[in-house]
Length: 406
Image 1 (cartoon, rainbow, N blue to C red):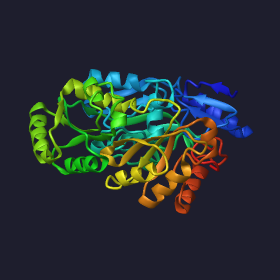
Image 2: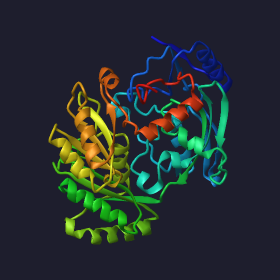
Image 3: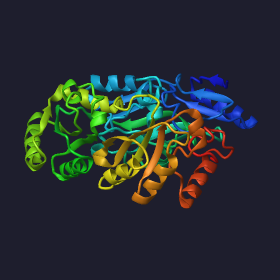
Image 4: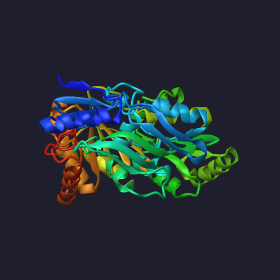
């Protein structure tokens, strides 16, 4: 078992990393550990957690900006924002219910380190799009700062964006600065039942092309919809295609009518009110419809028009349950357990139809044996190796977490 280090200050973290660098010891970087079961297992001699680097260091509601230490629980961030009627724009998703990690425990640093965004991404952008600046320690044991407090201060901003989604393989974030937005006055959800995948994606694409500002567009196959907590939707035994509208109450009412009129050829629409909408999308944000169990879970990004064809092609090789998010451009795909996680078939299908696939849930032995993240093209591999060499030339930070040879 690796030695656990809990630095409480930047200089302590720098000291720990410097010691590991000197002895060339591999370091596993974690926040609360809620995403520890994702990616290739890291065989670290030292485990460094940012859990003691916590606290909100700056919050200016009028400027819509916040800074927080990397180990600050996301729940604390969101509670503070909610008290001022504000929220994170990108609706960070909690993978713990799907992977068996501690629920509701993820840290704000891990949110940006993994760039995991929820349903609102189609409207507001991804997590990295709202990251203004970071502080951290790289694999050279150097303290550094990139970005600033406002978007127009672009000094080093590309560095901050580049580290978002690097899964702790380039540097350890110690503080992040990010944009926030006001909560909408109200929200409503328009739902269509029983649509096959191809028609459902057609509905989502049509709705997103309308000037009604759809902030969530999902389709759950019937087998997945049966796992919802909403008793009415769960008992229907039908697929659920849902569209979310958020704004001032008068705007939502008008846009809802316009949306229903444009989509009337797809059948009668159901509606969820404000409270039901919050509960429904909260479920999806926690990914509770893909609960942790023996099956495997893949996350596939592709073109919305391609998504149903891609899922149908994979279904020729194995049973699948699919949850389409981001208007169809993101697929959460549950497949039966297998020694190779169905990697060969899924990679073949995504190569033919176009897409990127990441294995989210599997046993450690499986994750150690297959390509968990999308294999890199030669050009991207050269770029990735160049970044790794610049930030962590000795390769001590989360070695092999994303790719076996990096």
